[in-house]
Image 1: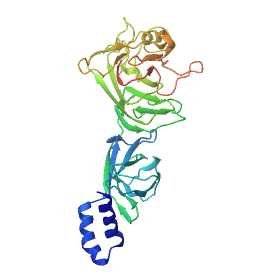
Image 2: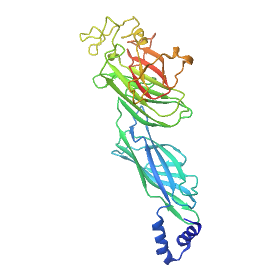
Image 3: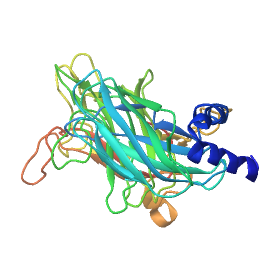
Image 4: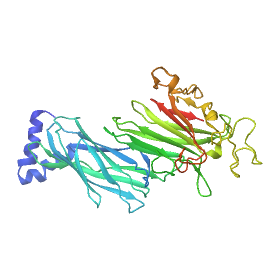
Length: 384
């Protein structure tokens, strides 16, 4: 649109006579269409609902794009946040690039700084919500209003984005991870937690079957990202134990290093050779609980066993070689003692005693369990 045409349009819309406004000007606006567009993108598209012990997040990137050559300014957003399938409410955690409020009734309002000076220019801001403990989805709907240079107020068409909510799962977790400048963020799959213990504790009883848990600690100063943890019980055995577990971690970004804690329940362990797992209860039998302390240290399958256990790491970045792996070394034998790209290391291994005593206290629920603490820079799969 050239300068003369743009000026004519402004005259017709803003100061034209009533006849022009109802005739020529109306035709001009109908031909021109909206002066800006609003797009809302949910990240990720599916999130595990929050629980009493773990808060999860859903994030929304809102982008306003100018479709006009005139200057657009004084932007604001007005919309709603609703939870489908429940009366529980999502709450505002943060807003980046705008100043936002979210009322108890679900009204989301944001003041957006900046101007759009030409066609194709954009303004973007991000709204992050704490997910509710119930519901099937979160829906964000609304429009942006703005002042068109030398003319009047206008608004974008309404835009909508939804995030599916899934029930807490002992074998899976999906969430947005907000940036945290000063404190670390702890994420975990599993539902059994204990005060004083980072993340989830394995549990196998008449109500819950969660023999393997994954906890991820994201260091302070990390950028915002998404996190997905998926666990599965493999058919084969490994590390001389009758059951083998896999954790797949997907968390894009760069970190000082992630701390990954893998725990397995005592019912999944086999004692050393000569005292093996037996259906007759001679070894560590899940049904009978007759474990064997193979190195007299008060453990089912003792520290000597976990010290020799193997953890495999699959980088998951080579589609042509999906089964390529390394055996994760101890950090104590790695130069500098720290992980490098595609080379995680094990910071500690611990076989907890079967009983808690004043001399060797054990956090409740970890009696007899194994724990690997891994430092890593990358995504991938861990098998033990």
